[in-house]
Image (cartoon, rainbow, N blue to C red; front, side, top):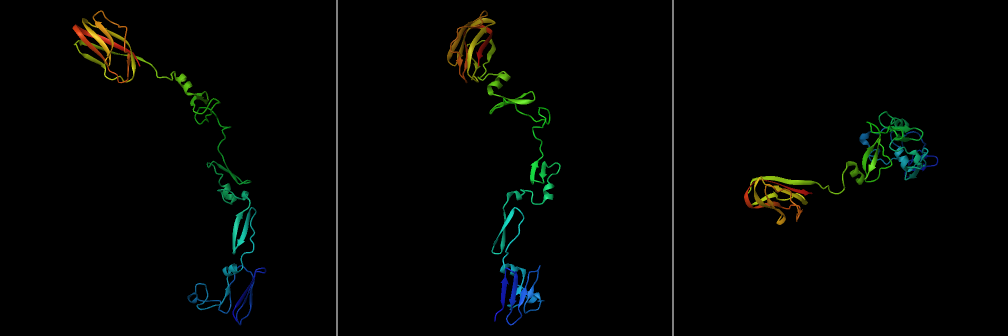
Length: 288
């Protein structure tokens, strides 16, 4: 007759009946081991991996075997948590999200410890909520002094430039900024001139500007000699702007042509018909 083991989940008892032996009933206690048919003390040198002597087929009670044979029937969980039983395992579930204290844990003392000077955080024990201790801008000192909170007035809009307006900042459009700094949206036109002096004149081409840095318009031409005479022709590239008879009595010229000089344009003065002309001074005025 083989050994028999009877497990009764309702009463949580285990009945062991060995072949030809005495029936033993095991009732729940904190921890116990009952060995049937063997000495209570077995040398580990003769035990196999499951704690039985080599070659033994005796069965005995352990907590692990009892748990496997009789799965957990129920588990009492705290408020906000539930459990389910499956194959002897207990699965814990959260049934009330208010039971969760995110990032702080379940220990109230640990959560309260978060409220430490300098951390910028405060723990509310009644709600389990951690809040910031940063000062609200509603109570901050506003202005432009050191440590003040700088605020915007109602004029600030998207793509604005900012300008200090008393104790706050205001928005300024691109057009307003140009007005503020006294500038114009278009490129600024300025007047300038090329000036020079030729001490001893020769019949040749004198270069005034080999490549104008930007487009410009010739607006004036002044030329005069210290002595002698010469014919002077102001040119824009190969085009004549003005041909003038130069003497000690000549000066500002009028009636110009071909005055628009392109960027990288060449400006020259060609001297010809020279008659002992010396100390010829000139000025070529333009706007750019």
